Image 1 (tube, rainbow, N blue to C red):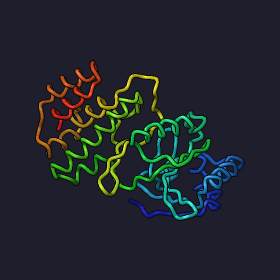
Image 2: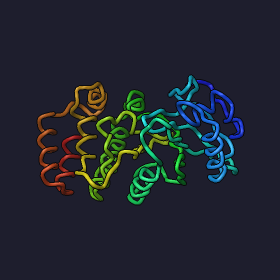
Image 3: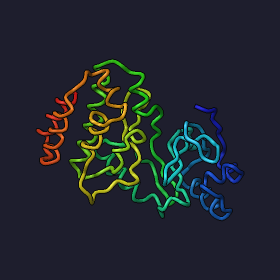
Image 4: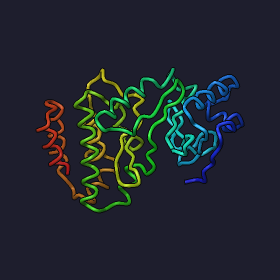
Length: 253
C-alpha cells in the first residue's frame, strides 16, 4: 500500500485533490458545494491511501459510480467516504443508502452512518479483500467459519428479497476486517425488485467457477464434487428454503 496523505477538507480545493472530490474534473462551483456537504456531515479531513488510484492519487476504491477514501470526523473517528463521480450516471446516493440500511437491519454490510446527494458515509472495513485473505490463511476451521459466515449473510439477503446485484464480481465486494470478520460491501446496484441471486452468485464464485478462487478454497477444505454442488444450487434456486440452504452448506463446506 502506498503512503497515505491526510488533508483538512479546506485543502481539497487544490489540485489534484479537487479533481478527485469532483472526479474526473473539478468545477469551482461543484467543489464549493461539496465542501459544504462535507462540513454538514462533520467531516474535517480526508485520507488518501489504498491500493486504488484516482488522478494518480491512492484511494481505497474507484468504481463506476464513486471514489472511496477515508474520512475523519471531528472526534477523530475514521469512516469510509464514497464520493459521487460526475460521470457515473447516478444523480445521488440515496438509493444506495436505502439498500445499505435495509442490509444493516439483517446484520449485513458496513454500518450506514450518513448520506447526502454526493457523499455516503459508512463504517470503514479496514482490512483485505477476501481473496487476498484466502491466500494467507490456510487454517481449515477458520476458513470454513469465514465462508459459512459469507453464505449466511447471502442467505439473509435472499430471505428479505434484497439482491446485491454484483456478487458474481465478488472479489471487489467481499472484504475482511482485521479481526477476521467478512463484509459484503457496495450496494449501489442492489435492488428489492428483482429475483435474488446472492447465495447462488457467491457459491459460483467460491466453489464452482473456473477462476483460481475455488482452487484456493479446496486447497484448505479439500476438493468437493462440483457436479453435486451444481445440483444442490439448482435445487436451492427452485426452492429457496432453509432446508435447501443447509444442504448447500453441507455439500460446500
